[in-house]
Image (tube, rainbow, N blue to C red; front, side, top):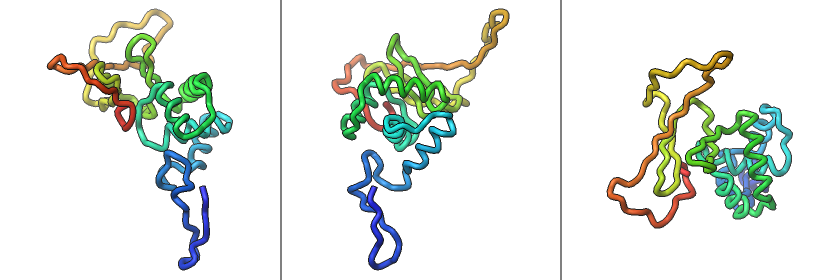
Length: 177
């Protein structure tokens, strides 16, 4: 990011075309906020973690797969391997920065919203959308086996088009995927 003094105002101004992608506004997710978030979670802010943290958290609450984040990193010209993306997502999840949402077999999304809530999973375009926690009530849970306790309950509501038509393109961006 380039900061140059403004000639007229005597205050620094930021040159927007030098702000690394995806950040469009210097206040949306400053690099110092990503660094602080990593340190608070007990993670060392390495170059790879900083780059992926910026890509993950600069866009607000969202759901991404490792493959989606890898594609974003490639578009951002970050020299990372898919294995690094997987490892970093696992580390972020273990540190409480992300929540894993397993929707179908090996298909896993990572949610930047770690609060208690549930999800819609659209089978047609493979997108995940939050359902606020207060909209679903789970009753009649079984007794946990001896020595165990229920730590959480996650509900995934699967969706598909009612008319049976297939969607030709898959959504991968925005707040849905």
